[in-house]
Image (cartoon, rainbow, N blue to C red):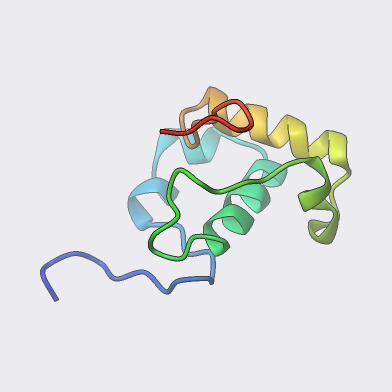
Length: 89
C-alpha cells in the first residue's frame, strides 16, 4: 500500500479524519446515517456522481423530509457538495 488507507468499497466507510472532525460532531444522527448510506454507494469511480434524495432515506428509517434536511445539514457543514440535478462536472 502507498501509505493511504484503503477503503472497503460499498460498505459505507467514513474515514477517521472525517469522524474526528468538528463537522462530524456538529451534525445530527440522521445526517450521519445519510452520509454513511451515501458512502456505501461509492464504488471507487463514481465520486461526484452519487445521487441521494428524500426517498433514499426510507430504508434508514427516515422520512423523505428528514432525509432532505439531513442532506442540507451535511452540505451546510461541508461534508457533501451538491449540484443541480442533471449538472455535469
